[in-house]
Length: 310
Image (tube, one colour):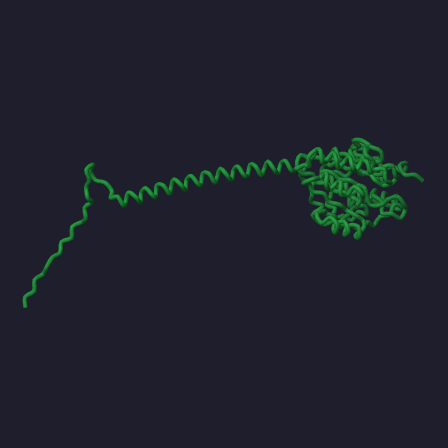
């Protein structure tokens, strides 16, 4: 049986032409229109979202800046309330409170405040240093734990002071013998063997660039009390060994008229750095020092037996 081969010829489809020449079919035009509209919508959404995020960021930054310090009225109210109740024995006087507060107010955004002593003014300092970092060092683990229990947001640590007020002369003699070694003014206190150095604070405390140090503890009004000799020496070293932050540290010493506070302040904070004295509060401004320096004060003969009462 004879077979016949058949050929099938396929012609490419040719778009229909319209009166104005060739045009895309209506269906394709609809797709293109949808694509264009979708792209425009996406672009509009992206732009408006970006602007909204930028506006929100500006608002948040402004809000954060406004909250960096307490409103002046609140700051003054707290200070006024504390001043009215400052007649109780052991508390800072109105003039003393204002002396510390005036320095805290100068901190533009944040202030690093280190306070030796858990006192009546503890909550005041924490409040006035709003948005800054405030750390309290106490001599009683019980008082520190109660403070943290009642006020969980407060940062406080207890330290074991190994000095006694009655040992003042021995401590100063030890300092003189180690002035160019363990008791030098620029050092890492964490590894110091100086008897006046506090080397058992939490490690991170030594790395903070403290703007203000207030010494209102530990107890020092009887011979067996720890005294503030170690706190004053430690403050002097922290200020001179400071890394970062401002060039100088404000150091306040309460009860400056007592012998241990007076002698140690003159030796380790120096009379040349004394800015003012309000009642029983001395205000020093202690600058950084080169690591090769070995004298706390420019007057290297500042320590003399005449400073000690018999």
